[in-house]
Every structure is written in structure tokens, then in C-alpha cells.
Image 1 (cartoon, helix red, strand yellow):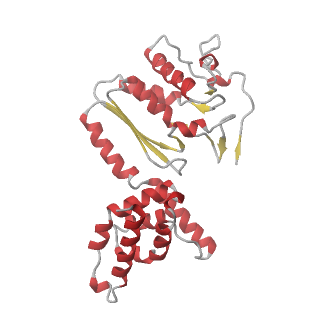
Image 2: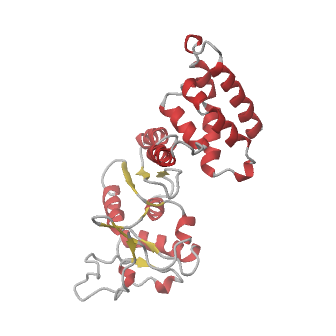
Amino acid sequence: MEWTYRPLANPAHYYCKPHGVEDVDNDVDDDGKGACGGSIPDDTDEFGRVLGRVLLKYATDLPPGTCFTFPLGGLRIFHTLSRLAGPVAMLVADKGHTRSRQLAERKGDPIVSLHGSLSMMVNFHAVGAFVREINPTDATVAMTPHQSGALDVALFGLGGDGIQTAVGAFQDAFSAFGTCDLFAVRDHCEDVAAAGGSVQTPLEVAVLVAHLSAWDCDVMEQFRDDILAALSAPRGLWAPSAERAAACLSKHFAELESSHSPRFDPGGKQLESLAAIRVALRSALHI
């Protein structure tokens, strides 16, 4: 279930509505604490100055009425780590917002989810903006391409050649094929089970299963009809996930072909399916 909380005495302690810079209220109680129990940053220290630059960009770039959360705790942790010697990197995961477009679509109070505990969407976009403001020339920000998926994963780093190695590992582990892909396979299996097997397999799910199988052509052959149907649809109607799946399939098609074994395909059905998929894929991608 989801619900929104009642108006707070000073909602700026939880989120900001950037109609303008004047709407970002940093008032504190007599003890220097905000309503949420933490110190409200100002521009008298480095952390406050960096945070202020991010808020100014939000006030300028986001449309009036936009509502967003700000992960002050996470920002303080990264800022503290960045002041230590040597490069620093943080790998984090949760459901959240990774693009400014997602933030611009949010109006009204933030949604609080109740599922045994309280949780809210994490503003990963703000963390990335904060890291870039600390050192624009030395910042690394990488996020999973899935938007509003089951789980968002992000890598934030500053300095060092090792960070670039971490970015490569991040792309392999989470961007090319990662947690949201596994959730997509799980959700599709649940849909198939509920519908008694009458659900057409989306292109992205077929490619995900093929990826899980290390590009086994026998697995691909079992999805032949669904893949051909998806590739024959007008490309203008494709979802971003289908575009990504088609590109991934094209990239790994040679691996599918090399996995073929005549011993396990005496009738040549797998080769026939691969040939049909290859033709449809090239036609759809114009290659």
C-alpha cells in the first residue's frame, strides 16, 4: 500500500519544491537541528556550498511544482569519504530516480511505501549531481539504464585509475545484463504461469533468457515465433527495452551460431530458426 504523509511544519527539511531559490528554506530550531533531527547544511562549509550549487541547478532546471527528496545522509557520507586520501567509490542499490526527467514528472508530496517498514524513492540523480560538483573533472557517475525498474544500481567515484576499472565491471555486471533483467524474467514467468502459457514472450525477455543460457541456440529456437513477431512490428512502436534487446541480440548473434551442434539438431530446425531470426534482425535494424 502507498500513502502520502500529512503536511509538515517545515517540509523543506524533507524535500524542496524549487519554484525558485527562495523556496529552499534552511531555517533551523534553536538547537541548530531541523525537524528531521539532522543539522541543516548552509553555505558556511564546503558541504553546504556544494549542496547549494546542486539545489540552485534544481531550482533553475526543474519545472515549478516539482517535488523531490534529497538524500542528505548519503551525500554527507560521500563528502566525508572524498576528503580522505586516495580515490573513493560507492556502489549503492535501491529503488529510485536516476534521471532528471523522472524528477520533473513528480508532483505533490513524495510517496511513502508501507511494506513492513517505511521507504521512499532514492534520488540517485542528486547524488550524481553532488559528486560532479565536488570535482567536475574527476567524477565518475554510472547508473543502470533501466528507469523505474525493480532495482536501480549506481556507482559514484572520484579519482584514480581503479575507478575506470570499476566502471567497466559495473557496465558488464549491471548495465549490459543485471538485476532488473532478472526481475523481468521472473515477472514474465509469473505472467505465463497465471495465463496458462498463452502470453507472448517479449523480445527483451527472450534475449534475457538467451543471455542466461550463455547464448544457447537451442534456447533461442524455442522463442523463434515470438522473436520474429516482435522484430516484424514497426520500429516506431518499439519500447526502449526492445531496442536495447535487439542491439544485444545483434551483438551476440555470432555466439548463438557458434553454439550450434549438429548432434543436437539432426533435423536442422535450430539452424532454420537462426537463419530466420538473422534475416528479421537485419531487416529491423537496417544492417
